[in-house]
Length: 281
Image 1 (cartoon, one colour):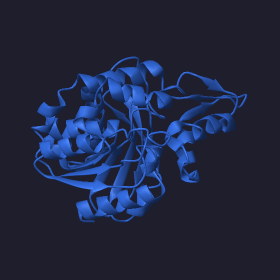
Image 2 (cartoon, helix red, strand yellow; image 1 turned 120 degrees about the vertical axis):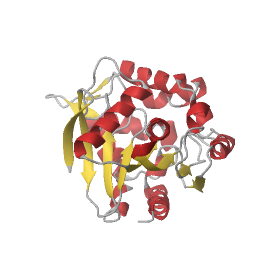
Image 3 (cartoon, one colour; image 1 turned 60 degrees about the vertical axis):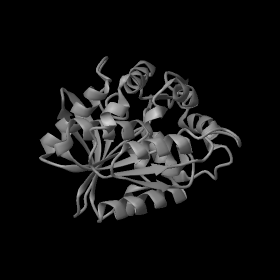
Image 4 (cartoon, helix red, strand yellow; image 1 turned 180 degrees about the vertical axis):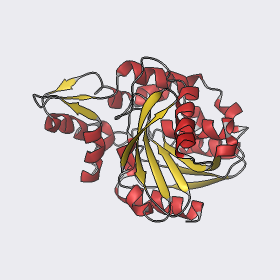
């Protein structure tokens, strides 16, 4: 169920998937929205309650002109939990959302029982990653004649190279755009806001933050090429291993796909199974 809530001075949009077990909060990647987890959440149905978020400046959440530091995003999540009356959660996220989860565990440990980090590692927070994700950023700030044109551009993106297209990804991209009266579409996220959020990640002392994380962590990792054959993954095996070593209680699970495709198909199934086993639901 789609819902809106006032949190930290802005209006946040989230998807509330009911369940009888613990509450899992999922924060999406840098430019993504709550529907990024649409292929994973149904496989967790009934085992736990899942709250999938649109972070500020993404999806249908408010997009203030400023306030895109990790502290701002963390305050949004905590405000959401306070308003919903949820004391403690399993905090998880993909990419940017994984960094946000680590930040929350370090700075509000009483609110985070466990962590699910999907394809994020401390040494990834740097200029090289900004270059790797540039194709995903290029669509922002542009207008496309129709959603079909927008989708055609996305299907040609390097991270989908030779990937058998999964229609489950389309709900994510539909939520990604605003459709004008003439049928043209434009990404909801603004380049300046996304750039500010990326700068916010790079600015943080992540090794210091990880030194404060004592909760059990599940690190889900994909080694698929983020582009044509021979392209590197977003998170290398060495970077993932380094993050595992920095955490006192970390379980590592390798899943199929690359940084983007891991959220669908066999990757989604592996992620859902790993989360269920980790949470004990």
